[in-house]
Length: 185
Image 1: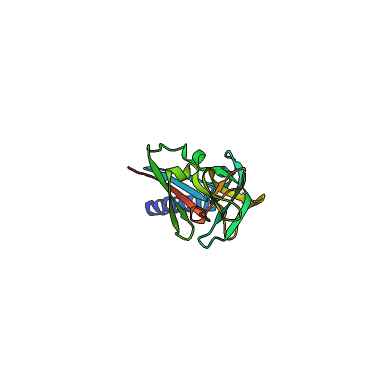
Image 2: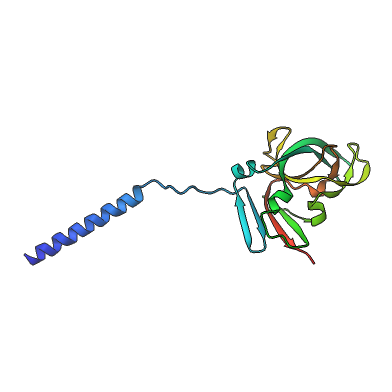
């Protein structure tokens, strides 16, 4: 009789445990899988951004293009994106810094603070050097009113102005996935 009771209790415990496990496994997952298109690091602070979040940030639209080493020019095109200074103001920036921009394929470009603030060499549409300009460096997500994709995006570094000056192609990074702020002496 005592053995029957123990067997019955054990059976009930196992049955209840199985029901709880089944319910836990069957419940739909409520956690949203976060897919960051961009991460920014400044020291120990790291922030990830989804595309929807980036699209709600202040934006700039302007003309920009670049000149390649062989003097071939591309642009100017109409780009829309977030000014880099807006993205960086969310971080405790060092007094002097550079930024390391990384692309999806592993390509990296170091950009000085002056360049990140828009002080760059500018060229005309035909590739003639004009001088130093004060452009806006943006993290672009649109070109000619259409979302960047394919070879360029979804995000790329661009330099824009009202005048449509061109800058050096080495400053333009496509398929950007991360930006790291690096303190400089």
